[in-house]
Every structure is written in structure tokens, then in C-alpha cells.
Amino acid sequence: QVHLVQSGGGLVEPGGSLRLSCAASGMNFKLYTMKWYRQVLGKERELVATISSGGITNYTDSVKGRFTISRDNIRSRVFLQSNSLKPEDTAVYYCSTSAYGRDFWGQGSQVTVSS
Image (cartoon, rainbow, N blue to C red; front, side, top):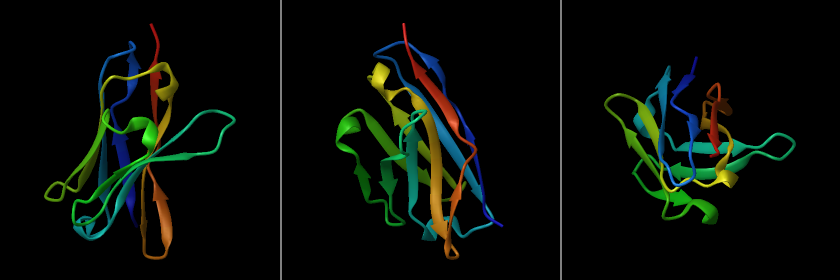
């Protein structure tokens, strides 16, 4: 069974930085695209960033130049480095992957950007 366990998140002032981490188990991590989503209460979940098995990255326009997704295939982890954070980045962030015919999700990490 695939498990995704997140760490990081919290409260940060506007302009600050946070790093989210997601540890995967139960899968051959290096073979799969990993994703970070975020969701604001009452809104649809938004795809923030993806990183392919080959390390190709993509970002939603609102975070380009501020967020960086990366992966460590040795330790089966994916990261989201978030810089120059804005209040509108406030959300619950989820790591995710699609494997063995279904989607798997981390438990979610609250990121709050506020002064």
C-alpha cells in the first residue's frame, strides 16, 4: 500500500519562506510523477506543481518563480520550497501521486501566510 506522509507547513509572514516535505513508501518512487496540490476551504483543489520521474517540473502560473518542486529518489521524498509567500498562498497543501491505477494523497499541511 502506498503511503504519503507530509511534514512542514505552518504560519509565516508575507514574503517569508516554507518548505514542505512528503515521504513516500510502498511504491517504486523513482518511477512516478509527484504532485503538490493546495485547497482553500470552499474551493476546488488546485494543482500547484508537478515533477516527473525524469525531473521535469511544471508550475501553475501564480507560483512560477516563487515555488520550487524537487525530489530525492534515494530517500523517496518530494519537496516544495515556497518563497516570497503571499496571503493568497494560504491553503492546505497536499502531495499526491497516481500509481497502480489510483490516486494517493498525503494527509495535508496547513500553510498560513499572515502578518
